[in-house]
Image (cartoon, rainbow, N blue to C red; front, side):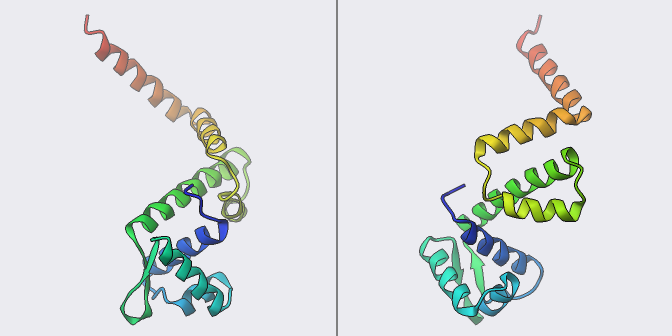
Length: 145
């Protein structure tokens, strides 16, 4: 990740979730969403603004900047990999998998996530077959004779 703390990642996810749910992402709503005080939410948003990840707009609405959007996409990718690992490999219930992924997305290194992605790919017969087919096509294209 880009050096964000788990807390900052949670704030950008909250801003994104509120914005995409049709609700206003103001300080009060962000605080409520994360179960923190309005003062804590305001301080966190100010830090995100200084980092160039969020901005306050008209009507006290908070939005993510382009860089903030990139960060939230990266966090969501990490969440998805861990969620899939919990459901597909560990066979945890989807609800527990989501809770675990929400905690663990902040902790796994990029190398660990790549290993999990490889494990997920290798455990999916369709993905393995697709990968083999793609590699075969690439080799056929490299050797036209």
